[in-house]
Length: 248
Image (cartoon, rainbow, N blue to C red):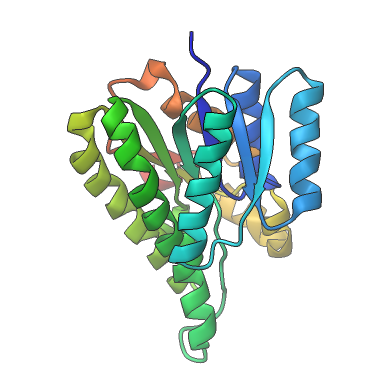
């Protein structure tokens, strides 16, 4: 069996890191990417120590050009290792909290640049090659805030709601060529990025039937399923991994 290669953006910590470790344990060659090279190399070393194959490519995904450059570098890594870039996980994201009034334009642009523009141009530069080979899997990481209105998260939620729509559009566009595109929408998850929420994280989790805060590995398991061949008949889905929050 040919080894698949996966590019996971924002995989130096949190959900992205857990996904890199999970896919590597499943036998996938992983391209770890993020802004912090030290943390990225630590993830790579952890994967290699466990017997997996991983590489680090730094990227500051704030605009189209950075996405184009990452796509080219990740493709080169995959080809140098004797494979192709078969999986893309658009996980890198930034958020800004607070009321609408007073939100700086620079903050608005930064969120939309990383959360929406970068995934758009990564797909634009990677999906056509997947389609030409007749196979590929893309997973976009969304958020509960894209479906449930949470005060202070308007810009972040809007960026992810738009990404969910792109998921469906790309599923329709690339599906006939064998490329599957899905979203995973996490609920409250214990990550370095959510530490600042403090007790509110547990309060938010308590509103769901299951009632607990997820670990990054819980989200990674769902992502791993969607990129696997076991999900070969699944595309265009927004998979809620939120403890049942959106059913109540």
